[in-house]
Length: 392
Image (cartoon, rainbow, N blue to C red):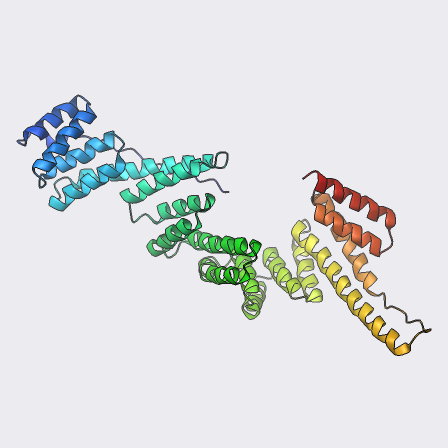
């Protein structure tokens, strides 16, 4: 989870008497001003509550009530009182705007602080969201506040809340690539949850919902590797292979020296079982960056899967030929697939150095060593995988 950066906001000092003084007013308002001067905020609130009941058109009383509630940190109550004051007149509009802005900044920063602490204590996400909601009430047109609130809802797994907040953010700021990307990710996560629950239909529906925000993020930031890989993945999951092919091929054509685009194209081709083409893309990515570990691993996987595919075809052909030849005749198995397994080996071995705790990778290596007749290495690899799995 990414940490947020605190927003620097200068606090606005609340000055009551420079604007209100002791003009003629109700006895309750006059008493409240004295209490305010003495910082007896509870008593001031009680007097002003009586004043507005007595005269609900008393703009000054509503304004003072909002300012007292600010001191009491009753921010939503403050906002309600300020709204009532503004409905009557604009006499204190400037002061109200300043106080709201200061409260927004304070609550935004407090929400960020709590959100960052949520990575150690998840209960803080709820408190952070409460702060962001107050900030939204103060500055309802601040798109960024809806975004961080959506990020917080996502962190606490309130996906419906996150979707609502991020959708509002995009309404306020249609150019927010971050909000579009996160909205797509929320739908993608929901889809994965449905997959884990064996609900394929519901999962597909959520993957389809992820497409528009991911497309929006890519439209806004077409050079982002994350945006293109997200879109390729969701196209692939929703059987939009033509769109995925056009996207990946177009990205590589436009920027052939971008290792991430080469890698993304290779992943797409590998999922289509287009082994030679995927190998070409992974190899190009490694040429651009010899230390690109993900490309190296997938290059090994591409050779491995190609070998598996060839072995299956060879076995099926040998079985068919054996039936035709009849009993007593030995049909030779085409073992050219072994060459692909041998080509996969160095890439997977190198990947095991980068990912020494990846049990699945060691299992792959164990099977691969067995196929190419290296029993000692196969045994060691399987033992390594078992040890890692037992340690989980």
